[in-house]
Length: 620
Image (cartoon, rainbow, N blue to C red; front, top):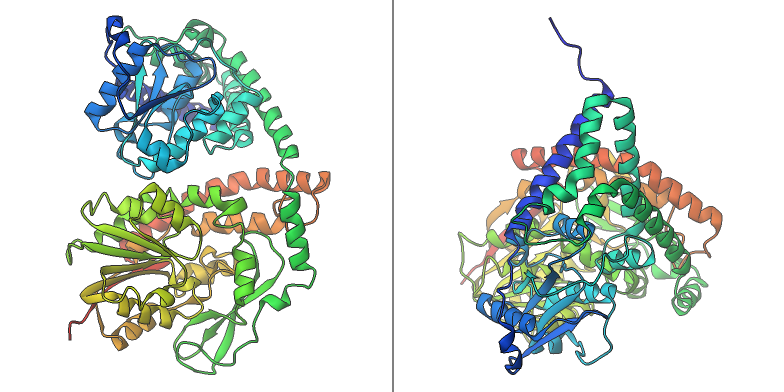
């Protein structure tokens, strides 16, 4: 006898049950990996405070001296410089939320990982506080402020930050299950409260629907969600003993619904209050009063790479990254295949279109994106393994220094310096992600740095420059004989460029000035005395073709209503932006699945949307 296939509802219930089961098991394993501070006898409370440490606590939190001593002893024994202390009675939902975000077994060693904690107490060395510019004697922070500080401090102790449960520390209550305080805590951790609240409410609605429409499967999924706090935290060996565990388990659906509604309401209210900065908006209005044509130079009649006059339009596209006014043209050379912006932006135009993207208004978002490229950074660093053991490395176009920070895990004894036009390179120096940060144009620094480096890297840098051949000349000057130049670029010959047209993310207009085919770059390197020793296409692929196309299309249809260079936001523009974002959610999900398949194909066929070259400078 054959059984009918599972209906759509049964499949939904099965997927929910599997996802909840996997999440419950993962949280239980992560809880097991959380270290617990040893209990220090209270007779040691009179011992002087260990030198060099400060304990920062949220308002209303009063750790005893024994907890402070135990935390100092643990941190010193583990070689930590930042230690977030979790109260033993941490509220159940807070504990589950933290376990979703943090894998304790990997947290310390993830140099690019976000700093996470409970928001009650953080032990920090005075040296880290000084570098981070934090005054430990200032007013006590609230939990959201302490969470933001923990996130920041991990940047200054990238591989020396940990978490531990402090048995003698109490959170003093269940905390706010939602509303403005919770929304502020989520924002402090770089998480979008509105989107998370919407996801929470949507998940509850889905669970309720399958529970009503599908008996056993739906009831099992809903029951597992209901009992999850007790299943994770209720065991006899659990190092966390939430004071609200029974209440949090019994009333979880109701409490979650109320918390989601309150957080969503607080997020909407905060969104209405986040009007563009008046001074910033006024500066943009002044810049735009004379139009955007003045930001473009005269169109050139020939290819900047080979001099050919056989040019054709490759793509015309507005600014889909920020939605600033203007329209840009990329042309392709019919002889060498070089793609370049024509007419190109003037220096004044570059300043206008870069403003508030990597710093200012967009700085945090850009930093978050760069912080999630750990696998790509590691692949770039490992490309050198068969060829060199560098002592000195200059990363040109380093931005905030994320690559240098990640590459230290591959090359711990290498000195990494960084160069960039933006202020982020100074922050990278303060955080210790680079030893020395140079701010300015690379060709201008080349005479001062001549022959000083064994490796120079240019990862997604050349395409941003006005004259990439001059940048290659500078690299040749800065490298010592036998040194290596590592380059990664978007590949204008990618199939996705033709398929997606203006929505292909690596066009990245108006920032990308030049996109050179690999053959052109190999020839230019040979002309400057380099020998290419390695070339990678599939491993350099960035899995964002379809996801990026959806994001750019959504921005084109409904730009951010609060952008300071746009007209004042209205109810209509806010409603349109919200509607487009909601409609794009299933498109993003489908795009992510397609990108997964596309990445697998790129790895197998060694053909993606980017390529890497490693070239050695000849010794003669």
